[in-house]
Length: 266
Image 1 (cartoon, rainbow, N blue to C red):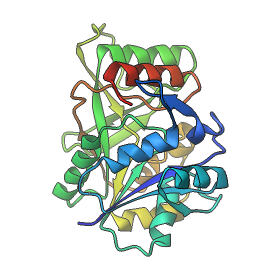
Image 2: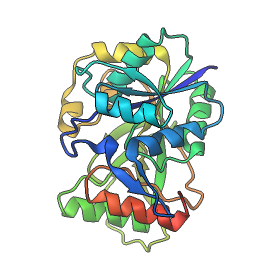
Image 3: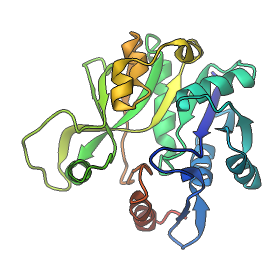
Image 4: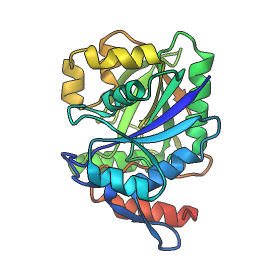
């Protein structure tokens, strides 16, 4: 199956304007923009036929081309990354059997997350969309809870059934647990990793659906699939001692830089 990885990136983020061009320092102190780090993460994935940055902003286009990325210009009307990926797929003339949406705020995404995601979708013909989930240890769960207490969105959590079909995704920490966990303890909470793999039929149908109440309340694009009865496969991935976090707020910059330093990532 041919695989396209699209990295949607927009400048006018409500919570963090200009986020794709924010510099992040690696272990050696060298700074690279968020969009370059996300592109480098995509380029490290095996079995991918094409990687493109999808944007509506000339500043992001120019920065991406400067470090060697292929860029597809999309319209400003795209409401989220999935709509931008659908437009990118159309602009490229289709022909790909799987389209991966690697959101431009997840530069620490390990290559095996995406490789496992594509393998999971291939192995489950009934699923139309797949997304990775990572079991939280106590330290990660406590970070999520602390963010919520401070009024910050620190990440998204997912709950799914026995068949790993997604039941719900939320910016709240779900499911509720009253237990206390040590830093290395496994917990029943799964962190949703902001990556998606779509079959083209589901991806191209998506922009034609109305925004439902759950997507509007949570601000989570994947809920539109659930609200329209499409199966979202949650693929459990392994951290393999890698730390993972998304850049959602300015406060996340030092957190990401500390993680990269700790893992020796340039």
